[in-house]
Image 1 (cartoon, one colour):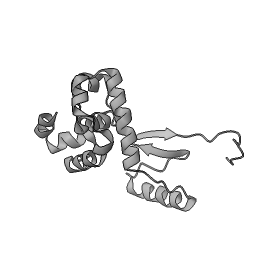
Image 2 (spheres, one colour):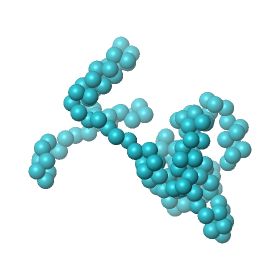
Image 3 (cartoon, one colour):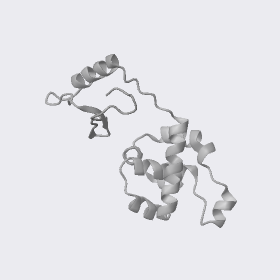
Image 4 (cartoon, helix red, strand yellow):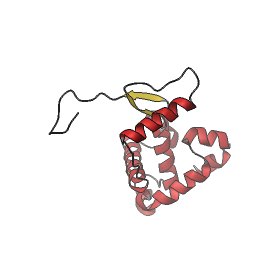
Length: 151
């Protein structure tokens, strides 16, 4: 695993993991206390999987990789793959919490800023709340009030 990382060019690394190598190393060190497994116990159970490899599999999956390809490439079972990815995602969320300011003023400002930065033929899409990695996701408002919450 480490040899493969060192052989990658900067471009290959950033395309594969959607971040540069120094950010990846920072994340590994920050997540290590939450995802590192006992070495001896892991060796008895099929082999040690380092925090670096676990984060690598998690990021590849989050960036659109197929579990079939990733699990096969790294020689882990489907169950092990999903256990590692789930633990990796939980650790990321716990270590790097994301706070969204969804106030009307902030959203209006960001929508205007987004529209100004795009190519001339692009514009803000009405009814779209978020955009993740180039995938547009339309989120529909519930049709009825649930538990006294306004629409």
